[in-house]
Image (cartoon, rainbow, N blue to C red; front, side, top):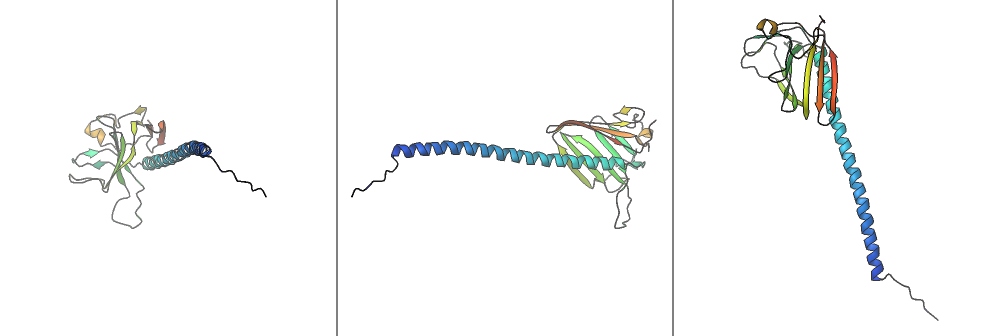
Length: 205
């Protein structure tokens, strides 16, 4: 009786198979890495966009509740209800209402808020009191956005102006007048440029 011998793989065949498997593995690994990187970048972009939307909602909420309340600042000077200065650095400070007091504490429902542009970042500050003493510090200071390449804020009176009130006299700085609208122009490294116009309670002249 004749016995058939089973033929195995030769060394050359094994080496060729291993080489083909290595090449296919490298291709699959590269494609999978690209997919994972793309997915990670997409999730990071979505988080950044959500943060941006949160910041813009916060700004809009602040400006929609402007209140005609002047204050005394930490230098003992009167400051207007809405003060916008474009130089030497951008600074916006105003009084807003709607500060909820569910615990019926002995405090006002008004709050003083300031936005500034410092070293590529948008910063928001608030104070627990309206009229400040020389030792009064902000109750909260937060960097809202980083990677800001340009920030322009203008207020509407009879025209768009980068300073409000237009005059820098002490009498004008203590003015309780409010603009009729506020325009915010932002240019971000990640999302480019956009403009938001927020109506305000002031009467246009």
